[in-house]
Length: 260
Image (cartoon, rainbow, N blue to C red; front, side, top):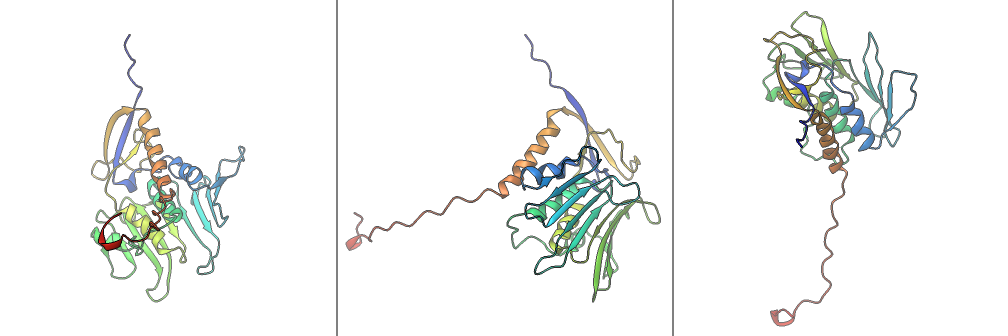
């Protein structure tokens, strides 16, 4: 008796990631719920998702909107920071939004995590006016800080297919959004590694091979579910407490320099 071949699905690996389309929202929502304990509302009659953080300070809303941002995250004020928000339009790749939410929910961010949103852009050679605007080498992404260097305002990340072309997607960050979270987004934005999609190119803003590279591979259907599970397990490891340090022995020191 032969074992049936596993069901396969055509997976497209798309680069650059910022032109890969929105992707599967569960890449964001499932880890927030399963790993970080964010609770969700249950309103089957509404085409939206609402997730709230365990401390009720953050609310993530995913709601299809024909003319506005589909993803909105609002955070309540804290003793050291006013209330702030971040929003993302429909075609913002979920991998970029996930980098933002992963940084937000990191239980113990390390001191060496970059907190300058411009750092990744400079390292990747993005052009800049020297103050508040950065443009990607392919002219498809513009990162702008509104206001002035002395009085900075909100952030805007805009993706288009070239100068003076219609916007593909936008991400906006309130002036009070923690810089390390914006830095996590810009670091993901500059990551050149392709991202996977299973819609055979549907939803891409362009199929121009000079702009977007697509490589399709037939993979077991379990690959996609396995990728999400691997992400869940990776994030869960951040919340796993370290084993307690061994308790020093209370035995008296050996006499005459000899062990007992």
